[in-house]
Image (cartoon, rainbow, N blue to C red; front, side, top):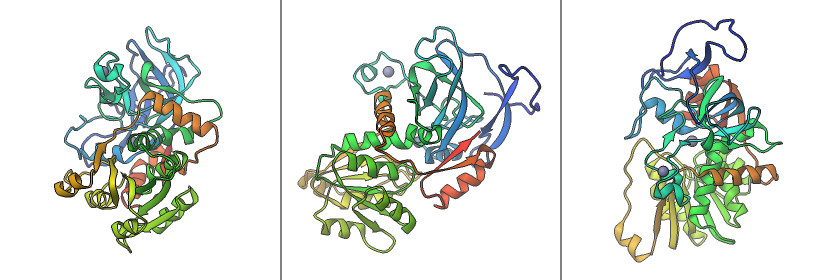
Length: 354
Ligand SMILES: [Zn+2]
Ligand SMILES: [Zn+2]
């Protein structure tokens, strides 16, 4: 992607020469809202007029180049983009102009490898990721692959649909992977954009939820959303508190701190399952081998979810089973929003209006 400094021109409404988008030019530098060039659609692509785009912690890691596999600046972050299809590239049959779609992290996959054909497209080696290896939703427009967008059912507010597109589907899948069944005790570590959804999906699956965080406001939100127990890990040891309840059948690690992963491990009962979801910049966690073997512990990684998972997430929301806690901000305030998320000043999710 190349960026220009050309001011917005008076080109026709359907084909402006440029549009505004938030761009990462260099890791750790603030993003700049630039006028980026309108480009032609390739086969299978669609152009989406973005209505809402959520800010995920992954976008911040992308902008910092925190992870072992890094994006290549300049790039446009955002993998919770939702908007209306305004143009179809050659050969597109999956969606029509006027459809509202979500543009998730899994922006493209090959469609024919073992993973793709067995319902594990999220593990495809050929995958492209929105806002990371291809430009994402932090703009007035975005280009996506028609096969990998998911239609948003009528009646869902696009500002709700945006957080569901990553925070929702990722935690929905994590609860599926955890195997939560009725009466299971589920410990959710980290009540942010992801955690506030995880609590609801664990409860929908029949689990009794313990929410763990460091901030009382977030624990209050957790209770409102169905957590039966809460633990403030800044004030009490979550391992002790959860073991006192009998230990968790499943623990879901959503906080970007290796310490929280270790605590989540320690909170399990025998035969329990720990699901790794968050991706802290610090990539090291220390877990004991002996106890893992003797206690029959399962540790499993869970990355986002498939298109089917996202359809189910939208179905649940359309049926009124979930609540999205979010605040809307203008995309021009992207850097302030990132600072607020990093400082823990955001209760759940920020969603940008372009
Ligand atoms: Zn995300
Ligand atoms: Zn594949």
